[in-house]
Length: 545
Image 1: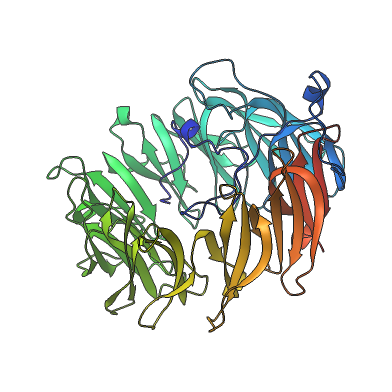
Image 2: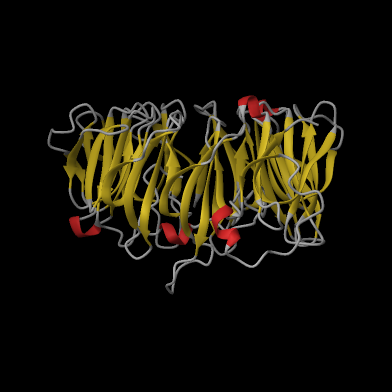
C-alpha cells in the first residue's frame, strides 16, 4: 500500500467486517475485529442466549459485551468499546458503532474509561508508536466523519485525556511517536505529543505523511485546492510549506526518506497519471514516466520500479531504474502488481495482467541485471519470504478441475514447485522456517487443515499441524500459534494454542469471538472477548500449551 493512501473521507467504506478470520480467501485475507460490547450495555438488555459451556476460563479483564477489541503494539494494554450502538441514520455500514472507549492492562487491573462517542471505523482510534499514547475521536459524527481529538498517556492510570481539536478528520503520529499531525476543520496542525504546542501548517488539507526519518511532513490538499502535494520541515513548522505539484494522485517516500515519487494527472493521456520524482530537501520535481500505474522503491532505497506508457484499462510496461531517476531497463509488459524482496535482491510482479480475471503471469527478476523469469500463470497475488529467497503465490488451475494451488519459487531455480492443491490463505513464519497455509477446507472455508512446508524446501510433502481450524495468528518468535475453531452450536469460536516444536495443543477457552490476539511480554498471553452468555467480557489467558 502506498504511504499516501491513508484513511480519509472514504474510511467508512473500508470498515473491517466483523467476525471474519485471518488468512482467508485467495488474497491471503486479513484479520478483522469482531463486534463486541461491555458491562453497562449488557445490564439494560435482554440476556443473550447461553454461551458455550466453560466459556470465560481466563482472567476477566472487563465484564460485559464489547466491540473493537485491540491490543497495543507493546502487548501491555487492551482497548475496547463498550455500550456500542449503531448510529440512527441511513447509509452507514451495519457493523459501525459508537460507544465508550476503555483501556485495561492485559495482566489485569481496573478498566479506565477514556471517552464517549468513539467509533470502531478505521481512524477512530490508534496507539502511537512506542505505545505511550492513545489517540481517539470522541463525539464522532458519521455525517462529517470527524470528532474531538483526544490524547491520553497509557502508563499514568490517573491521567485525564487532553482535547487537541474539535473537528478532526485525520490524525497521524510520527514514526518515533514524538510528534503528531492532524487535520482540524481542514487545517493541518503539527506539534509535539502529547499537548503541543501545535502550529497551523496549511488549510484545505486532506491527509499527511511523515518521511520515515520523521524530518519532513508531506501533505495533500483537497480537490478544492487543486489536489496539491506540499512539504514542511517538522523542526520548522512555521516556515512556509514547499509546494511540490498540483493534481497529485498516489505518492511514496523512499525508505531512507531522501526522495518522493508521485503521480500527477497526465495531460497527454486523459484519465491516467505521469510519474515524477523529487529529492529532499529542495523537492524539485522531474518527470520519469508517462501514463504510469504502479510504482515503488526497493527496501534499500537504491531502485525505483514503475510502469510506463499505459492506456486506459491496459497496464503499462515495467521498468527498473536507479532511485535517483534516469532511464531504466524493461522487465515486463502490462504489469499491475509489483513487490521487491525484503533484501532488495529481486523484484516480483504480475505481467500480462488480466483485470477481468484479476490475475497475471508471476514473474521474477534478480537485481541488478538478472533476466525476467516467468514462473507461474493465472496468479492473483504473491508474497515474499522475509529472507528474500522464496516467493509464494497462488495459481488458478482450470483443468482437469478448477483449483487454487499454492506454489513456491526459490530464487535461482528453473521453475516453481507446487506446495499444495486447494489453498485458502498462506504466508511465511518469522525467520522463514516454514511456508504455512490452510487447505482441505469445508463448511465454506470455516474449517480447514493448517499445514506447513519446512524451508529450505525439502522433497517431503507438507505436514499437517492442525485440523479443522478457522483462523490463526503466529507469535513474533514463530514458536506458537493461536488458532480458532468454528463452533457448531453458535456463531462463536473455540481458541487454542499450539507449540510448533513439541506439537502440543491446548484449548484455552470456548465461545469466543475473533480476532484473538497475542499480548503480554513475549506474547505470553492470549487476549480475546466473549460476547454471548452471562460470562461476556474481555479475557486474557496464558498462551502456553
